[in-house]
Image (cartoon, rainbow, N blue to C red; front, side, top):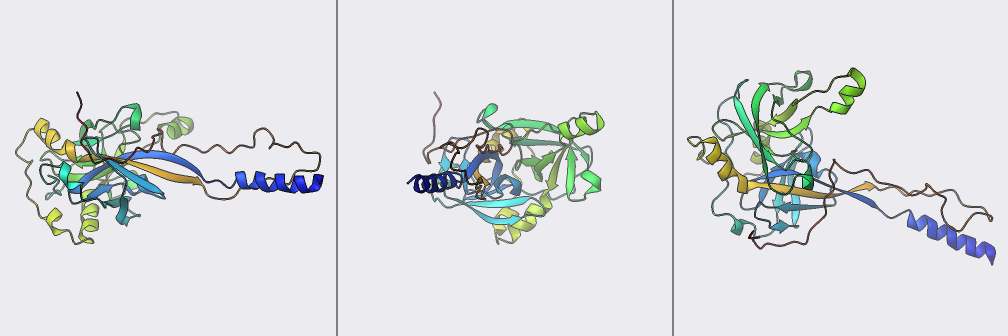
Length: 289
């Protein structure tokens, strides 16, 4: 009888450790088309079991899939499979791809959601200049920017002076890494993938209307440009498995306690640096009093 109880105990213990462990994360995206196409960085949604998109007016969409991706260049295009998405926008997205080459020293700005819910759910502006037309180790796919960005800004749009898209924010230098190894703390050394790579990804979807729309922002002030693009900057929430392998502890002896030993509980690391919670889907506009 004792051996049978022990066998049941071992089976139960093993089953408990087979439960998938998840972590939540967040990033930024921007609307390519109000028909439901959204661009972001691929690493924001990589391996996601579920994706949610939260619009600037508080609508939440959970029927989200990856329509196209470019893993090498860290880009993804999401598709919202909900016809109600378009109804929340009074106009089509003003996003237009840059038609002239980006120049070192030119001003640029990005919109995003730094540090997830720590900073709040309102899109934040970050301004700067293009410091270099190349990234780490002279990577020609990237531009280096002085704009302050944080975890949560990944996937956000980078605009030039005329309000045209010149890049997508993808990374920054790890200050902790450089401090521990070189005793220096890099400041505002961040990178964006050039928009030409996103344009190529859009072309694979055959969405010519996105590629050929006129620039309605080029003659406007920075303040007005920000006002018009903000409704089309969205939060991306993801739920990602962090532990998929079964962890089976060694079988206890007949003298083992009836509970797992102290310290055996698996603690999942957090994806990014800010936890978020999935919310109940809604397509109703939230009005702030």
